[in-house]
Length: 514
Image (cartoon, one colour):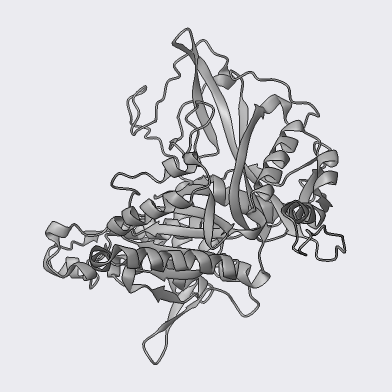
């Protein structure tokens, strides 16, 4: 048996040499044959070519159950493999962030660790600690320093959750009106809280009422874990909104009625929270291929789910840290978050270098690395449930967001003013096109994803800074190049503000690329 990677890509035909490798080990041959059989099986998701040359993605069987994703199968299979090299010299890591000897051998055995997970700095950084909105594992080892010297390590378990909310449309309350008959702003806020319900869950293991949350799985970001855990524990598919905040407490105080310890030298649980709202079941089915599977939590983990008012939630929540998150949620509601929505600004994945590309710039494609960025980014964008996809008509932008269009079945709309040439000729037209999508996002009350180029993003940032509600938000839209790395996005949460919009939250969306 021979194996190779020959396809009809232009780079393989004009500037690459394709090679075949002979496979002789019987167990490897059997594994390859099994994988080919899996790809050809009727139980595996596939693309079916139609008579007109278009393709239809078959990802579910006749009963609506999801089919096997062969690529996801390989990813999960290799994730379970050990990452250490048994032939490696002890004490010398094979890769960045890996070591095989603890710095403090005098520590108890349960405090020793043999490897670090990769920690990627998040935006913004809080509490003076390099924490992350994404991590390769749900456990991060952090050194403990005493008098400037490392004296040990503590375990930080990463988790995520959300405050799930909805409006109670059955409420028949009263409103205050001004002398001219218009509803006052104070009355509007009062009405929001009167008709607002939040979701809390009961954990029988700890006999407490808390927000739906849970630990990160392997190779999972905080935002993805928040959507997955809320959906698993409540049974409600959700989409993320503004970021609320984060809490920390010692693992030893998990489930205790009081959390008073501030000791940073013990094992700690670190949880990030967002606002989240329910989405239609049809939207949940549509995004399933992009987001991934969601399974209901066991009754032994969550035995009761309740929708209660904000006032009652404050009384029922067991832990003070959860009530702190509720206070942040109330602040977001007073900022107008209930009437806002997300716009996702996406920069295309890594493209072929300009100096090496012999064709026109509009036909310059993304690289294999850029394709992996696009595939991983879809998983993160799905957390916000975008229902409208817009892109520059140039090839590298279309290729970046095309996968999300295929997975969700959403049409891909092009915007000519967002190309590099159109922006260079008329920057104001590009901004007007983007500003129109901001307003349309609020009118449709659903998230929108827009993919564009680096120079266009720089010009758009200049206008967006003027729409930010605070100076701290303005600083996140940096004025210097390169503005955003390739294959990343920022989530702008906008609310109505007179004839324009106001940005009250900005989140950096960086996918995990394997």
